[in-house]
Amino acid sequence: MWVGLGCGGLLLLSLAGGIASYFYVRSQASAIESAIAAASAGATGTGASPGAVPGTPATLTPTCAKAVACCKANAAKAAGVNAAAVEQACSGIGLFTEDVCAKQYEGYKRAATVLGASCP
Image (cartoon, rainbow, N blue to C red; front, side):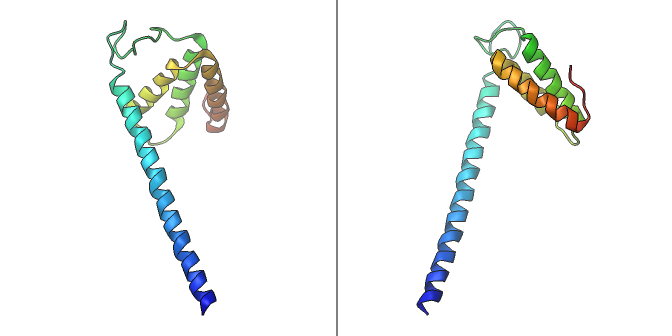
């Protein structure tokens, strides 16, 4: 009888832990989405070009431009993509540093081979 109660208690404890972890991860994802929305709303600064974030260059570096183009090429191959969201997400790559853009480009280039897309 005590073994059954112990096992039942452990089962309830594990279910409670699973539910708690689900809601924790969900709240973290919601916080990230809110931060992204706030950042994109703040990206309509008064810089040299519309949508430029103050303190960022008005033009993309060559590596970042290749990463943005490759991102858009990959997204074009994906089915059911929201074009406005893809444009915004891919253009956001241009805000990264040169080394991050290089890593992003390599990742998108590998993904392009799987998707059948071509990157510059």
